[in-house]
Length: 79
Image 1 (cartoon, helix red, strand yellow):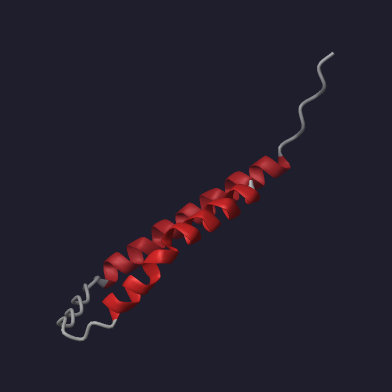
Image 2 (image 1 turned 135 degrees about the vertical axis):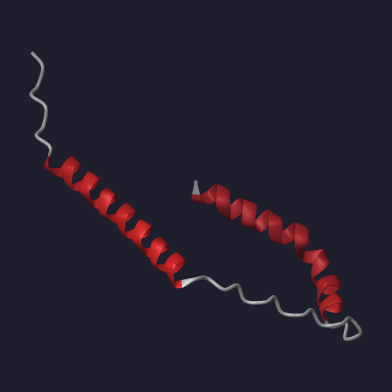
């Protein structure tokens, strides 16, 4: 499986190698205007606390599920 990912990565590297000089030239173009930074989104305190609460509930439920799986009695062998 890892060999497949290595082969895909090497294939992409070989396929994109001729494009490297073109990308370098395009990035050094100083005549292009600079992009304006995106405005920061305001998130209310209530929304932040709500997200934290739901994440905590999800984590609690997951831990509870794993605990139940680990402590469940093993089934008796069928005869």
